[in-house]
Image 1 (spheres, rainbow, N blue to C red):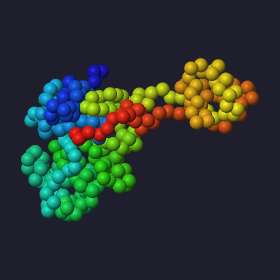
Image 2: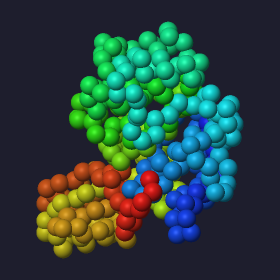
Image 3: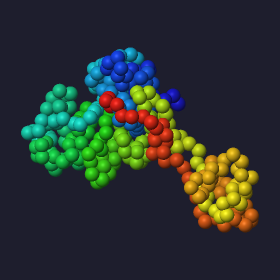
Amino acid sequence: MVDKFVIDTHGLTKRYAADVLAVNNLDLRVRQGEVYGFLGPNGAGKTTTMRMLTGLIRPTAGQATVAGFSAGTTQSLERLGAMVEAPAFYPYLSGRDNLRVMAQYNGATRARIEVVLGQVELADRAHHRFKTYSTGMKQRLGVAAALLKDPELLILDEPTSGLDPQGTVDMRALIRGVASKGRTVLLSSHLLNEVEQICDRVGVIVRGHLVAEGTIDELRGHRGLVIRAMPLDKARSVLDLLAPGQVHPVNGHFSLTVDPANAAMINRRLVESGVDVSELREAERSLEDVFLNLTEGVAGGTKK
């Protein structure tokens, strides 16, 4: 089966000035029906990329296809819903009336307004003025606005920004619910735990360039074992025989880059050799470890 890419960019580049290269030759592909996590340090080019995908700014070079059409065209925008940076609404209008204003511009029906208010669980507060909303409610109204056209692609820029723990959990469930209905979601976030829980694939952007991409497991790479045993010298000798070149001493224990399926055999050989094993467990790199390794030494810039 051939993958259908809802987002497909080639050499996408945005230069703001001679010395500000926000996005650099970006090749990004997001498959239909997946939740794609877009990660990067501050200034990496995430928001600039999203602005180009939604037609808010034009690229300096390269091209982007969004929902089958060139980014920013009427055909593309008809199939796209987005919340880029903080959602902005009329403060003295209610949540429902704000959506009514937006519906007049994009052709959504009043019935659709009630549907999206229900989806984001704002129906009971929809008659209250926007200025009275909490941060979480404002974010949810932003998602409701993005869903008004019943789009096939949803682009969300830091949707949990400023939310408390419960609000973050609620937003996470909302995004997964949206994705479960067959929509594609491009999600920018700095919360790695959130990305691990809701994203099918992840791309990491550094200085405007995609440096890694794959599933969470693919990015973590090869798993291994952590072993704590005494005496250390004797344990090291046995382990070197069992896994030559794959034994790494770390602060009083050993990290082995071996298949965890070998744990029972390794434990047995250590015990038979008179080594006391106090800890033996599977270890794998966290997404945070991967992210820090990929972005090590990168300072935040002025462009998101």
